[in-house]
Structure formats: structure tokens, C-alpha cells
Image 1 (tube, rainbow, N blue to C red):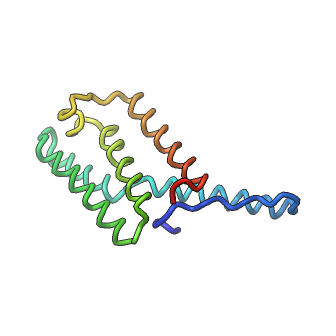
Image 2 (image 1 turned 135 degrees about the horizontal axis):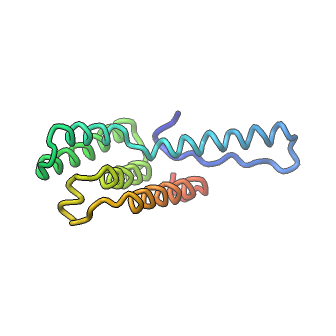
Image 3 (image 1 turned 45 degrees about the vertical axis):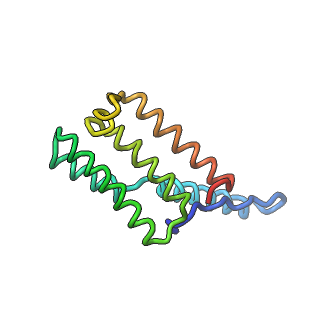
Length: 140
């Protein structure tokens, strides 16, 4: 799987055999799943979750853990020569996940308690918007 750029869909040729159309649709499903996986920053989220476990309730150290996660995300993705579009969208996704996890620096510093419905809506809407943009070739 190529994690460095978003994958554009394969055109489904009109007039092609049913087999060729089915293959193109399957290829598009695979590319959509790959694009979705690129939005999940496990390297950053893992660092933050370790910090959250170690520094429970300490806003300063939770903020340090959040920033360390973002730095790890940048270093790993830049090391893979990832496109800036993927780095940017992954960083935004990471911030949304930190908010959704709750009891962290975003809630304290921004006075924004986590509301599960709001967090779920934000993540779902953002991920869908990025997938639509990648699918249409607006971001690469």
C-alpha cells in the first residue's frame, strides 16, 4: 500500500465487459480503503495514548504528549516522503482523535468538554470530506 499520496479512482470504462467493470469497481474500493487508512495516524495516537496513561490529569504533560505525537507523525510521514496533503489531513485527523479520546489538553485549554456525539460527527464528517476530495482528485 502506498502511504505517501492519495490514490485516484480508476475510471470504469463504459462499454467494457462486466468482468472489466467489476475489476475497476473492486480497484476503486481498494483505493478508497487505502485513502481512509492514510487518515488514521496510529504513530501519533499511540504516542499520545502512552502519555495519557502516564500523565493522567496533568495538563502540561498531556500537552507535551499531544505535541510529541504530532512531531512523531510529521517525522514518520516526512521520512516516508508523504505528500503534504496527506500529512496535513492526517494531522487534522490526529487533533480530532485527541479531542474525541477526551480528558486531554484540548478540553482543558479550550474549555471544550468532549461530547461523544460531537466528536463522532466531527471525525465522520471530516473523514468523509477528505475521502470525497481524494476520490475526485482535489487532493493528492
